[in-house]
Length: 181
Image (cartoon, rainbow, N blue to C red; front, side, top):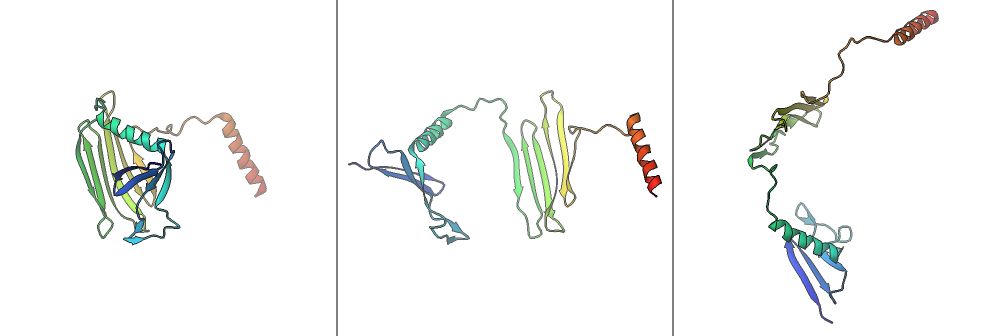
């Protein structure tokens, strides 16, 4: 019996397979020792080996090779001009800015909320197919998510005409309340 090994790195892990024939259909995946805060986790509760179908591993390898060779011809792809992320400081303040050459912009700023949650304000915009600019501004805090945009649907203006049957029902309820009092 011959023994074959498939092994390649994946973000610090190694996928390896020892099988006795090429017809084998399961690959052992060594995902490395799991750690939390630098301390190893018990292997019984967090196994470091998984069984993966060989066909899946082969398909993944083929897809990764093919994806590397496919030309990027999508006209909707755009170069990123700005991508800045500022992680929370000791007070919980953070922000993020993202812009692309085709007009997409996202700006977010946040801080620690008084009740423990996060308060965030931000906006995003992009150029629509008709050339107009779509904008949305928002606030998310202890009072919920509050978006503002011309893109959002608007309820009908009040007062609108109230149908007579509704007025009759309101009057009936008023008279009934008066009779009970």
